[in-house]
Amino acid sequence: MSSAQSWQRYREYLCCVGEIGLVLDISRLNFGADFLPGMEGAMQQAYAAMAALERGAIANPDEGRMVGHYWLRAPGLAPNAELSAEIEFALRGVKEFCADIHDGIILAPGGKRFSRILIVGIGGSALGPQFVADALGGSNDRMQPFFLDNTDPDGMDRVLAGIGAGLAETLCIVISKSGGTKETKNGMLETMAAYGRHGLDFSRHAVAVTGRGSELDDTALAQGWLARFPMWDWVGGRTSVTSAVGLLPAALQGVDIDLMLEGARLCDTVTRIPETRRNPAALLALAWYYATGGVGNRDMVILPYKDRLLLFSRYLQQLIMESIGKERDLSGRVVNQGISVYGNKGSTDQHAYVQQLREGVNNFFVTFIEVLHDREGARLMVEPGVTSGDYLAGFLQGTREALSEAGRESLTITVERIDPRTVGALIALYERAVGFYASLVGINAYHQPGVEAGKKAAGQVLSLQKSIIAVLLARPGRSYTAEEMASALGHPEKAELAFRTLMHLGANPDHGVVMERVEPLWESRFRV
Image (cartoon, rainbow, N blue to C red; front, top):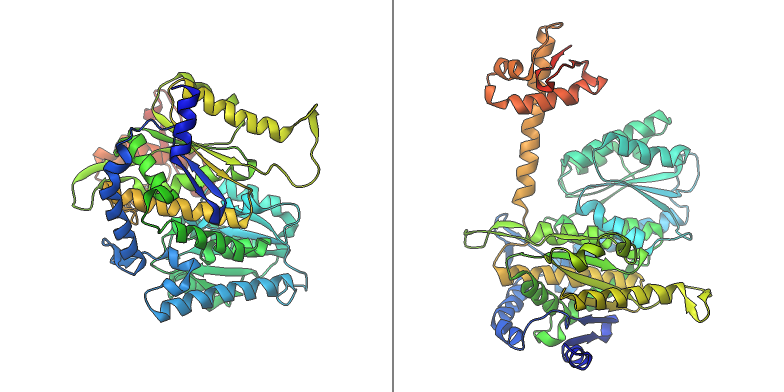
């Protein structure tokens, strides 16, 4: 394609959304002139499905739930006055609580102001808040955020060691809708123990964000925690960042959550427009459909050219892959849908996997995210007439051109700057695009049966571990190979699982299991 043809195509397909300061360019995807018209019927059905969802239809039939994350930034759109009032009350509660913390009305034990936040969560209860914290945080934060987002003991030890004696001035937010999520519960118990080791009363530092009447809600109420904020069953974890899940940590950090909600609300407004060429979320969903053949046959590479968007690809990884990665469609047919998402940041990527993107297997499409505003304050010229930001912009344009020259497809999102309003708009843009894409391919974007299957399997492994320990304790001093242990349990077919479990037990002193290592390794013996 000549430069003149490329320029013509760029102007034809450029979507400029002044209301949210965003520009979407899909011209570097090689769809033909008949693609968008040919998809218009399916897109109109997607608009109708989305409108029904926003009116309160049961959009998650597996669980009989509404899907209402859009109401979080426009409570008046909720299907009844009671829900509207609940959303408004929760937001007001977040603001009042944060003001009381910042103003010293609520103090840490000993009369000191809280200066840090420790957020304990997993998945959407951590990824959204982490993304917002990293994108909008800085040296002037009102409170410094820390996260426990896994059940890795060493990882928790590292975070808690980083807080150190500052734990006395640390507010802990535990986020779990059910209160029974094992990773979060483990993080909470480890955190409670850490506060105890410092002679601190955890309840006077603790806040819960959870479902009403959940296990966590009951614990917080019984122990007299500082506050409790709601998680509703009509908000999924991966779309919860504009609820108390994301707003509470952000507001405590010092982020203007009103602006973040405004950006999301404005983006929701423009992405409801049923005119595809003016709707950036619709165009984004159609771009994914074209690029992946509607069956996920290409990976989505997210390349934000801004350090503050480093965690955006991780956030989108969950939002898109947990929503789109489904075995069956809405009619029950096996379809194995999904789009793999990965990314880091530019121009770091040019010294990493861009080499493969340009010259290796062509199994992807790129989303460039461009931020026009470089920095606050004075600029430094690193060369005559050239700043560091000019180089960053040059690398983005150069990489985009180099990929196009090699026949590699991309789309580009351009925003003015990274601020709360823009972050809110980007979150809302991708939430809507995921919903549209799910309609185009006929799947339920709002459940996650594969996640539940993994949790169930993990529970079975832990049950097996308890049985193994019971066998060892019943005959102390006697050693077992994995095969002998599996037979003793009455499940000889589980020898591999028994061996892997025994290896973990032998590597840690917690249960007193000793490994007598031999070759071949699987013949090693284990005892207490």
